[in-house]
Image 1 (cartoon, one colour):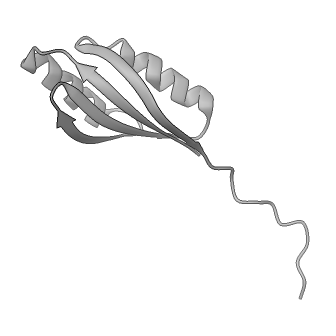
Image 2 (cartoon, one colour; image 1 turned 45 degrees about the vertical axis):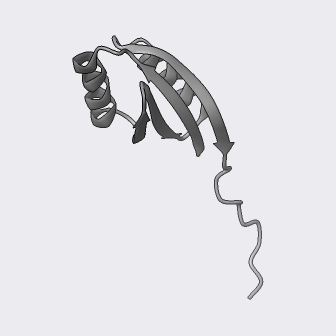
Length: 87
């Protein structure tokens, strides 16, 4: 699993910014954090880096998104495979 933290800079146009927040809430693997000015904290959890990149490109293209800064990425491998069991 890959966990990314973004800071999404939204437009100052509040109705458009609210539309972005609603879109993110209703789609994909997003957890929204608090707003700080025009910046929205977002956590994205995906199964692989390609999915994370695709969601980044999708979100960046939303009307009202001015910038997405990736501030943290953590990759956690799947549970290790058990090769033998001692009984």
